[in-house]
Length: 152
Image (cartoon, rainbow, N blue to C red; front, side):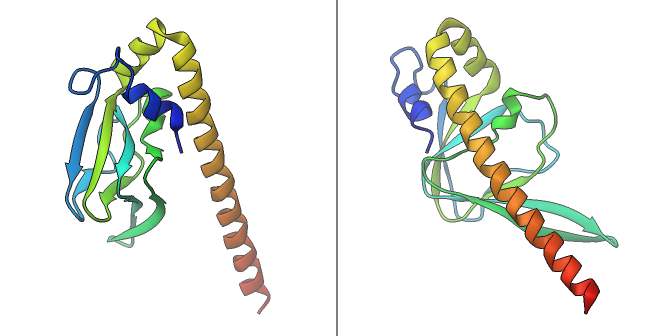
């Protein structure tokens, strides 16, 4: 859970509709698509979303689930660190409510409020590390499965 981001949303200097937007999505509605410009990060206020990869294999589009992001979790945070297109597609599982925070607004706020910026960035780094560890475990599991299948 990104408590510092929740705290930020209630900060008097970071007002809804001025600094961030509260957006409701319907079940199976696309939040963003792989390849789109990445200019905002999102915090799940209510509900959950699915992160999926759109991989082409032999001219067939294969959608594979990468992660499920629950209430209190953040996604799209890579936009703060790199100016690259979205790597994944994100879809609302059921009706959900998200806070969308534009990168430029957030970085400007961090410049003006470095103590708050430090706390939020530390939380974001913790979330990224947690996902990296989970990804490493999945990769090792797939590698192990592949190695076992070669010996059969």
